[in-house]
Image (cartoon, rainbow, N blue to C red):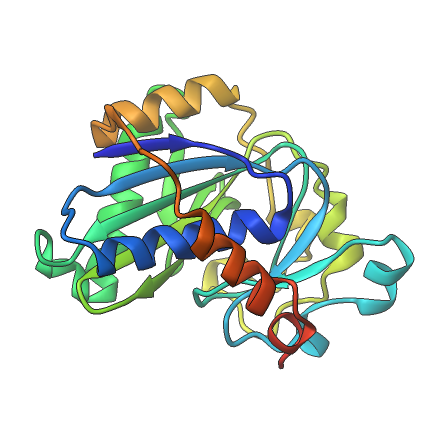
Length: 239
């Protein structure tokens, strides 16, 4: 598997890079899968592809605090990120792994792999809900999926030591929630894993045998996605 640890200057560029890696995999003859890791350096909100901004985001608060709102290409609920939140993305071949076309199998496979990667660092880590990782019933990782014909983008977050009050301030209570949440507020539902970032990176690279480096990133595709999608209210605030 190829490895890319890269945080681009803007949030829009980072969201675009995940999608561009998926597009590149589908368009090329290269069959090598990819693990990418990046970090949040400032607060922002990311809606799921079908999320409704008015249902999930306190827009008065985001405006007051100058926190930008984006929309990702994958599904799932809205999240808030900031320093202390790391992101990962897996671009996986559905030709090599046809069983992953069944989403419940895909969730079990990737979440199980993440649990295995991190078990020595966080033994109490468990898989709950559709695609959450939790510690003592509190969520430390949320994840989502985007499929194209022959490839899957499976990406998500891992809370390391983020300011969790961001979620309480910027997000409304979600209109949909996993059963294990039990109606809890963001403050009572989220938790930091407190794992050092370098240790997480090393564990994930080892788990996925991500040894080769990604070559030049698809810059023209990133620029196009930023210009036409991720910088546009027509996309970010479309619902």
